[in-house]
Image 1: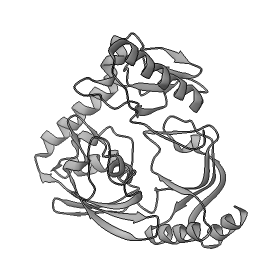
Image 2 (image 1 turned 120 degrees about the vertical axis):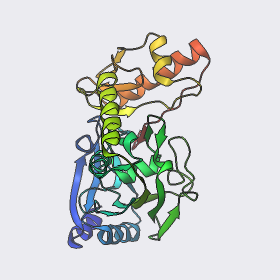
Image 3 (image 1 turned 30 degrees about the horizontal axis):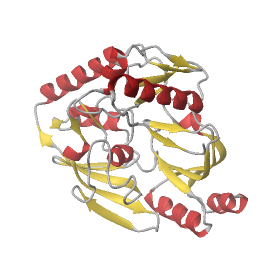
Image 4 (image 1 turned 60 degrees about the vertical axis):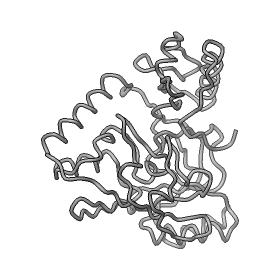
Length: 302
């Protein structure tokens, strides 16, 4: 790993950190260290970094802004590629946007709302990046990324850089082809929006923000929704009806505000969260016969 570390540093690809605690890079503030964490300064340096990583036979994975992510206490072996500064370009051409994978989705929604562009109102409170949002087909308020993504530029493990159309991304509920079928990094996306009335768009966004503020925990670190909705049921409602709101294991607690959120109530470990997830799964299955599946992505050593 020391050889790989030196090669990455010598390549001048951007930020390169050793044994970096991933708790600093996740919204729930949990996670052990990455052997190496890099933040490429542009897409070319991302490609260069991946070539170096592959030539050393090292494991790697990409993260965005760390939402919807739970990293194991032992951390992640190999290299973590963080899409951030340097991969956050934005070009607006009429109602078509070309945006870097590291761009904040909240920031983007705010900027385009002031330009009278509609279609991204649902994302006004989603604390992630464009790349991550495409990867997991992020959504809220009855809409998601599949409704607005025209195509995405994806970097695959073999170094191939390919544009995938909306159809080729195979979006479904909180998933895309990039997760398992064709693992890759979304480094840029083209979004198709619509012209609308600025006042109406801003009003909808404010309504969505108010809803999130009033119903979801904002004063504790969390990873977003923990469980997928087992439609036609809703995960949060099932947890609440089972009387589990406020239940706590170690520093991990089911939010008092919303049953589908687990918060870091203080010095929580990933194991605390995992134990709480297992407790909820068992409780809901025993009570309703419904199997709960996680929406949060769980990564790293176990």
